[in-house]
Amino acid sequence: MKRYLCVFLLLVVCFLLQTTLFTYLQIAHMVPNLILVVTVASGLMYGRRGGLFAGVISGLLVDLLYGNVIGVGILIYSVVGYLCGTGSKLYFDDDFAVPMVAVAVSDFLYGFMYYVCNFLLRGRLHILFYIRSVILPEMIYTVLVGSVLFYFIRWLDSKVNPPMEVPLKPKKPLEG
Image (cartoon, rainbow, N blue to C red; front, side, top):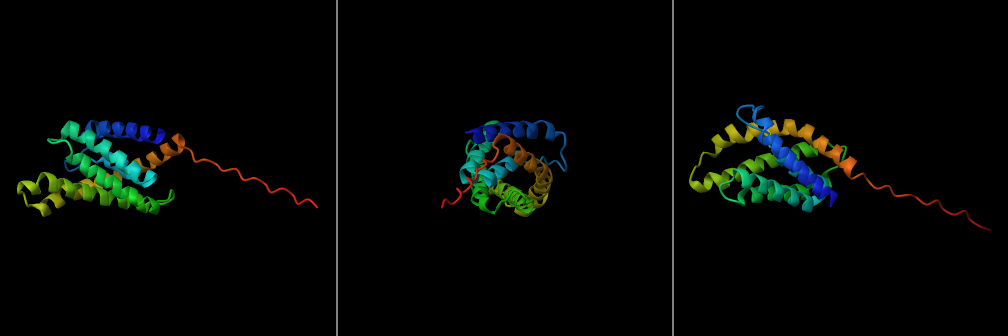
């Protein structure tokens, strides 16, 4: 329960940072997708359920404040969180490559699914322009900021949910 509460609070804080502070730190009119990084981190650290929970909350936050229809953001973030949760067995605490590749692939998948749901279904077929001008710059910026945020999330998780130590019982000496 502490993990879900921590993920929820982290999502709200990152959503507020993404929509307020990082709008002033735009690069090429792009803002890093911080809540996607939290969703990916939740999936990698807590598995499919954790990723799905973070995806639903992330999508709900985005849909309630910015979406025209409630459900598109929930679908996209939930798919990303669930897919990252299925790859949680590949993630180790010392590994740097898996989280950054997961953030990059997830941001590309998020951008592509967003394009399909919001533009392609309306007949706008300029996918190469959208990839070049929107998806790739946002992906690069998200990976750069996400590398710092991911390790902060991992540090916070180690403080809130410390690993349990298993005591080893010494063997009794042989009597005889």
